Length: 127
Figure 1: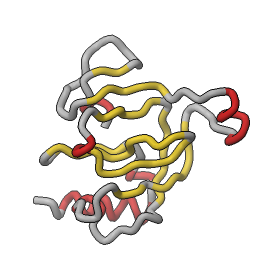
Figure 2 (figure 1 turned 90 degrees about the vertical axis):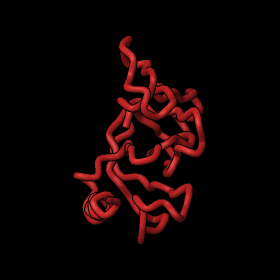
Figure 3 (figure 1 turned 60 degrees about the horizontal axis):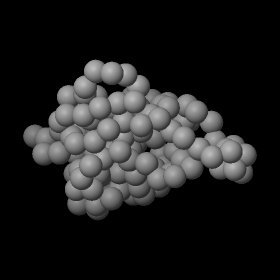
Figure 4 (figure 1 turned 135 degrees about the horizontal axis):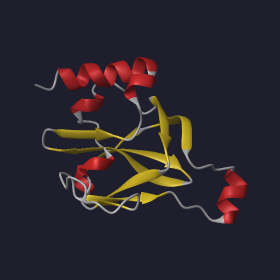
């Protein structure tokens, strides 16, 4: 997902620019860190909330779907129309994007058991 952006704080080279946005490192205040015990990288299971119930990548899935994450950076999307899923970790961040037939997810579907398998199945059925 992150390579689709225009730019990343992680390096100096441009991204592919396929979905307008930039990649930023998670940053938490000391209060947020202490109150919520937030760690970087964000690692473990978390919920993805669909932005649009009509999104075919999440077909037949509810908002209790949990996926496995391992990341220190997140996608800041320029156009809200490209955001198809969000997740809460300190603050809400974009966890799934789409532009036309280009999809990206921040989580690891291959490590996400039944929900990951459903994502792969839905993706294959998009053609």
